[in-house]
Amino acid sequence: MKLILTSAIFLLSIVLLFLGLQNQHDKTMFLANKLTELKGYMKYRDCVNIEVSKVPVAWHLDHSLRTINEIYKAVKNSDPEQYRSDINLGRSLVLFTNKIPRGKAKAPTIVVPPDTIYTDSLQLHFNEAWTTMKAYDSLPKKAFFTHPYLGFLKKRTAKRFIEIHTEHHLKIIRDILKE
Image 1 (cartoon, rainbow, N blue to C red):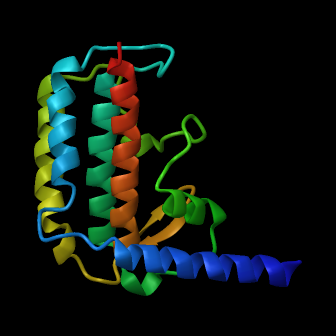
Image 2 (image 1 turned 60 degrees about the vertical axis):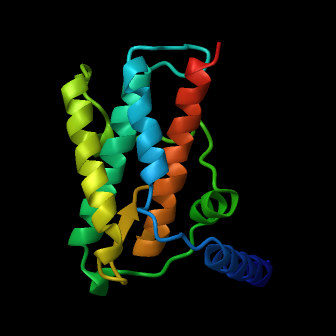
């Protein structure tokens, strides 16, 4: 059984690597379209749809931007010598499907928005995210960050996770705003 599981994980890793190579980004700034879309939703900051999410659009905006900025800081400040390869089925599933299941995980405290979210604060987070994403590719290749549920994510995988996570919250915002 252990051999079958190990073989399945190995094959899944090969598939994910292949998909990652097929999914190379063009030379435009990483995450530019998603950041622009996030910024466009700031005018709907107070909208809520309890059937979709218990929190307003502003919460999803703030959380997404905080996540982008904190992952960047973690990758930037990481010591590549501390990286450990590990097997994580949750990480494999998220990266394979490019989706995060809704309502299954609790956001780490560092990226949880405050009770009151100010538009000026959202703008500051947005500006920081824009700056950090311009600089992301200049980080060391072997830099990484440790996700509380998905484990070790190398710089390249962390970049993919940022895209998946941002799209996850954009989908929630879009669903909140549907009539």
